[in-house]
Image 1 (cartoon, rainbow, N blue to C red):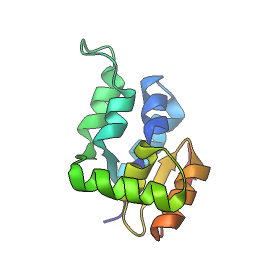
Image 2: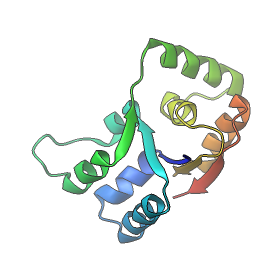
Image 3: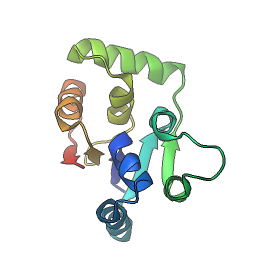
Image 4: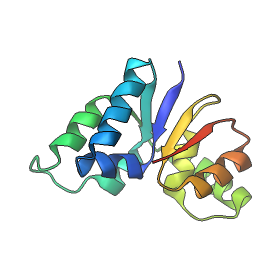
Length: 127
């Protein structure tokens, strides 16, 4: 099954109650796309422990959040060195993707460069 891999931009849009983004994610699920991200993306967008991010919390229940362990940290560092770039969060977004996935991103240039450097064949979808 292919996935729609989310970077922080998608979560930020949902947190702002962006109806177009919410609809886009629902349509992706209706078409059988798994929603996936990395745990460090969640850290980038989660800011409230008192339920003020209800839309974001609801979205997270539908997303496969992949852990960042030591090996992924190392792999992200290697990818950053290979790509000669410096955003470890974007590197993990690329690393949790698989061939044929789509990456929904607010930083399409960096994600495309990282994906190319990794050798993964993914589609880059701007937010």
